Length: 156
Image (cartoon, rainbow, N blue to C red; front, top):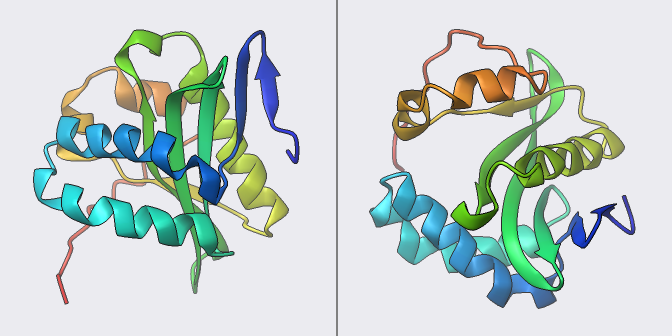
């Protein structure tokens, strides 16, 4: 995916540090829409790290150079599946939803994970996402399965 994926005037590619200013508003809006306003102040610093680390990647959807979508992915190693990726954030501007942008972002993230030796890619549906009765079937249609697990978090 060195050059990215193209569909008409839409380009999906791995983001670079130069994309920071176009990505930040998308990710901040994502967290606000998901009801995680408290996370917004930390997004800028974390996004800078994602754009620089080798075990993380961000992806940008560009329509004629206008950012209309973004995704963030990280990789980790676990006893159960070995090296795996998590599609942590996926956001498409509301004006561009329903046009295949999110599907292309998921595939870009999966290609990155595969190329980096991951055997599995996971997502976590937030309560907002779980309340959306279309989101779980949308992910299932893209090969994700519900493992029935619940995530508990502890701040350190």
